Amino acid sequence: MNNFNYKLNNNNFLYILIIIFSLTVSLYYGYRGVFPIDSFLIFDAGYKIQNKFYPFKDYWSITGPLLDYIQFLLFKIFGLSWFSYVLHSALINCLLSVISFYFFSQFGLKKKISFFSSICIATLAYPSIGTPFADHHAVIFALISVMFFLLGLKNQKKISWILSSFFLILSFFSKQIPSGYFAFLFLLIGIIFYFTFRKNNNIFYYFYAGLVVLSLIFLLFFFQKIEFKFFFIQYIFYPLTIFSYRINNF
Image: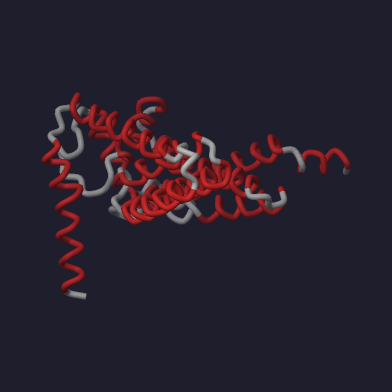
């Protein structure tokens, strides 16, 4: 009993349990049936990139290209299979669960409560659909960005600001919403924070990291000869027309 209680109080042991559970539950539900269109969308996109067909350039893309490239890498590593596909969503589910446990622990929650909350998140996050989906990626990455942003406000560590910016951009390149709203909110809070605590400039790492990540993404576009105008037309301007139509006909 004492040995069991020691393990429950050991972070490494709890992290291992969270990783195993979050991967297993997501993989299980990834094999529990499909939706005719949604379940195959990213599978098809990853296969296209594997055959050197790139988003915006060779096929129309109004959802984020990030999922397409991640799936391409997983196909490259594990082969073209359904396992490689559902592993994609399982890894994102695992990432959210592990970071959630870390976040809860950093804010002083008891380990048992942090562990239980993380297991609940692992059960509800990606298993609800099982296969990679733009909305889930976008929300999960945005939520992780919020966690690191709050940690940055709390601990003032550069790495927290950098990771917050990094995951917000991943969210945007998964789907335009909700990262756009969070970007505006973070900018507002960042300005207030800077003028309140002038001596602490670590928050600037948030913007530096964002510029670096965006530069790397657009560098990839350049090497793959994806014209920026195609990106803006398909990913920025076209979704705005859908939004305006729905607002006007609401």
